[in-house]
Image 1 (cartoon, helix red, strand yellow):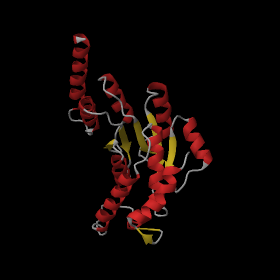
Image 2 (cartoon, helix red, strand yellow; image 1 turned 30 degrees about the horizontal axis):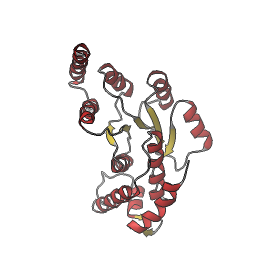
Image 3 (cartoon, one colour; image 1 turned 30 degrees about the vertical axis):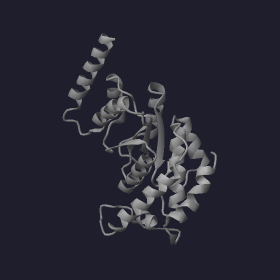
Image 4 (cartoon, one colour; image 1 turned 60 degrees about the vertical axis):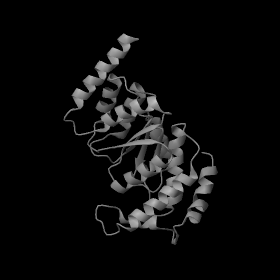
Length: 238
């Protein structure tokens, strides 16, 4: 109705006013995403907070390869305030929040409980960049607190299969399956080329992961090698 549309327009205007001067542009991007999905086939949206730069770059690249829209927020972002502002403006909330537990001044399980109680449609996947693997107990505890899952950080060992496994899990949580193997391989090869050209750049922190992208398990980082690693992951069932 005209009255409802007027209310939504006013809400968006208030949102814009409240965001002026704010340290983040994520909510503006969410608003643009909402407008864009009205004109085309809807894409799933992930809002992520990944303080480790290279980990975030990997997540951003591989999710986009699967036709997932990604907004990468600053570690200083107040996620609760942002979600409340989106709700107030009657904008569609992100389908998934991908947040590292080591984010400064952030209580991951308190946040998961808040999401479950206030916005149950928003899934939260936690990551822990400091862990190579997640124990059964840690995963069960995260899920009990309201997370959809807890995933380890990307490590040098078995990087390709680890990336494929983690991305597959995120897609399943969002009901956005199956994994597009070809697109994933293409983006990993592209990342390899970019990182090789920046091996001396101190901004590409986490040298062990950077080396892993150029050579996994001492094997050539080729399309054929990646297909061999990714194939069992893509065909497995959790």
